[in-house]
Length: 280
Image (cartoon, rainbow, N blue to C red; front, side, top):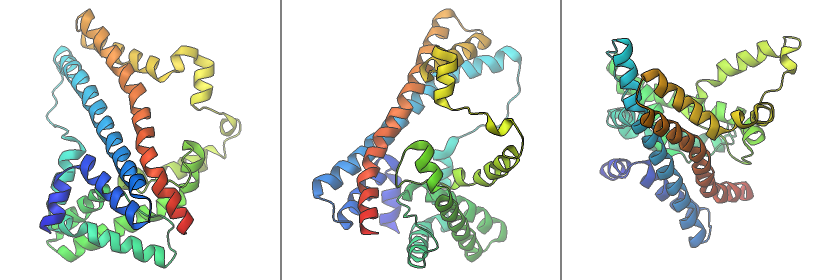
């Protein structure tokens, strides 16, 4: 348990590259390929983290100014997912969730109830969080573990069901999203699609990034949208012109950098994914 806790404490930017390197070696990738895949995953995580922190640093003063200007009374503080992950992994359920969910994944692959190999070990904290809530409410560790396993199994099933959509719309062959919080929105999306597909004319409307960029020209570009959003928020906050310009440029940078960092992260995932497909 000490080793697992120590590895988790290093954070996603360190833990995920190590996992990918080890997984690459297990799958018999060349050492250089495995190391490069792990490093690219780590670089992508760090790049995303830096970009998100940049956005937070830029928008925090603006949000405070909006609160003060309009006299809002906000009493709840959102600590974000890092704090939630630490809490989830620090419980009795969290201490067991990684080996339990990995074993479940192997069992589901063996019984062919899923085609997904979940290498996103860090985000198993989602299942630990759900299981921990049940364990705390019922004061029963086994019920908490059962809730975590159930959460994990449902997430894997939804990731399997949506894998073709991920490949089609994100152009990521062999990649799915076994992410607890993302999977939780899929049933709602299915329901909305079911309703929309039965509404004449509306179901034929095509709106995607290419159409938006073609129709709105510069206004459909992520950088331009980021600058507009940042500038409008800063204007609402009533800050000085210099701060308005800084916020607009920062948001434009964030909207541009995040997709590129995600692409870099995927460069590390591809070799692992391709090797798994070859073995399968």
